[in-house]
Image 1 (cartoon, chains in turn blue, purple):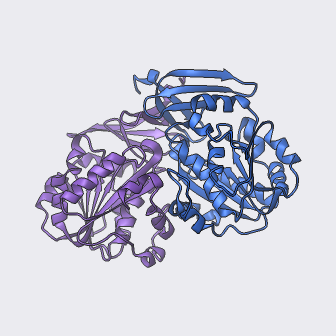
Image 2 (cartoon, rainbow over the protein chains, first blue to last red):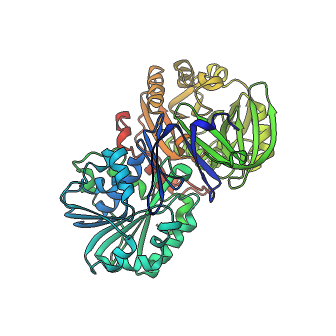
Image 3 (cartoon, helix red, strand yellow):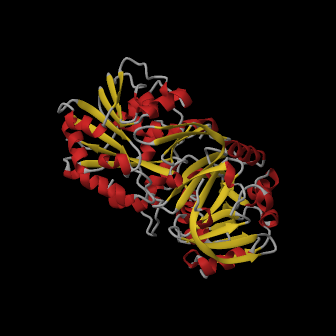
Length: 284
Length: 284
């Protein structure tokens, strides 16, 4: 249906019957790690494009949406986030946003695949410019095992910044993993996880919440946000809290933040808490 | 980059270097009107797909986002919208939403191409189920000429529901057209126009506002919303008001609306007024 397919990289989303493509000028790097194949493409309009096992992970141009929304809403919802764990997140974009919060004393990032971080350092250096922060610790290890072995009541915020719930990341979407997270969180601690497209993955969001509830979490919120490079261009994160409600956030802190962002601000945070009519069944 | 291209319909957005595709099972209808080629495809997951001159117009599954956001925010911003004009909008989805407002006494829809409406009646009948409403008048005529000849101070709300600002719709994005709209509006009247993707068309939005200001409009707001079938999956409409500010909306009316919607509600309206950090330069 087009004679230009040679210059376009497409990802076909089997589950949703839709596809997204970027115009590319060539593949600039590729590595087969013990876990997955990581490719880097140059695009005409979106900077670099990272693809893992055929799935679009991020582009230079639009990753700020996802990384800001995976970090600032949860950190401004917690009253005093000192210890943060990121599961996945190997491109380090979420880590960079988390480290913008001065009250954060320690961030441990646990990604199973060191090659994702090495590729990010090479091709998305702007996402890695906080990696040397003394508060940051980068582990290349199994995030499921890490949370299972984490000391009880030792963490304030857990950010699950993973690929889709198939393959290696599948174990990050079940009750056993959520029970490990719940145990590791202090009272009032919050788990946030990327939760796919509100429009085509509402049943996944319900299933995640069901498993989170079975693991002891009692309060949930799903925040939608735009993300052009993911299916439908509309994505979400879901927050689950231990032992406290999820009814507000530190609006004054968000309003007077001194670090720069490109999407997030206090108004956008409030806006992300609005529930579209078709999502009302979630009860947010 | 895929061996499945035969089963996918793609639109390549030259301006943004991105593409969107839907898995299709076949073309079910096609007509060459005096103005454009209209195709209807069956998709596996998105219902029917309407394509005009190769550009994706709407799908059964996701058009509610666009149509609700092109109608309800502007109608709940106007204090008492009685007379409404829709320029374009031949699929009748916006018309259907407008007619849900009981205070609206008359809606004139002016689309240049009758075949768009005929195809919508056949393949998207749910969008046309209010066409027989006695308050609705469907004209197949030139919207630019219609607004030029409209009686001064005769309209409360003008909705410009058009294709991209190239080809036939180009004349809907310039000062002369906006001057016609300004003259036709009553004091406090509002023009709303689809204004493309906030992420890749910010300069277009600024240019629209510039031309609107030159035509006499003084206050503007751009409301973003998700729209999977359009470039980046994130779209917007821009409101411009004659002789009054655009600082709020009828929140009580929106909250107590008795008609059904799938995306829009009072919280979503408030949320759409939040300006992402990179859009602050618009001054909303």
